[in-house]
Image 1: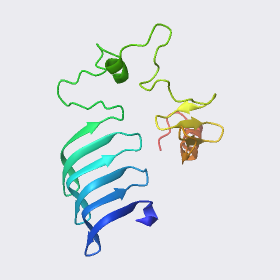
Image 2: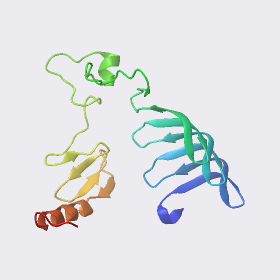
Image 3: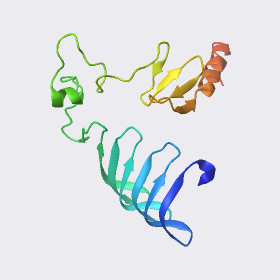
Image 4: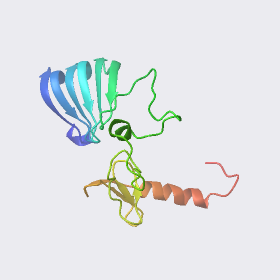
Length: 165
């Protein structure tokens, strides 16, 4: 697991993940719950770095029944979903806490929003700086390089019209 950047703390059987435990992916998403024969099996929760969570019943690594709760507490509903449906475009926090006074509009569900440095772009989990080609978390922690995307764009710019890859 160390080779791929993941880790596991918990019960094992015959050298495999089996029983109750905590599996952490390289993306810092964590699964906490039951496992069997190296797979998620039974009740377990995926905790995402942004604060969202997916609680489910798993069978051989496949979620059979579950519910998603966003970081702000909004719970996803498969039926009768009325959040941001075209008729009501308020953020969830505005639905819970009311609209802000005139002149203090919310640009994101988080108020005040994350500070994005000038010349950078919001990526949802951090910000992209085109000068360094790096995505950094809102707290300043390195998340990922974007050099490959830049190279792909450069290659696509050099391809002549009508040429296929």
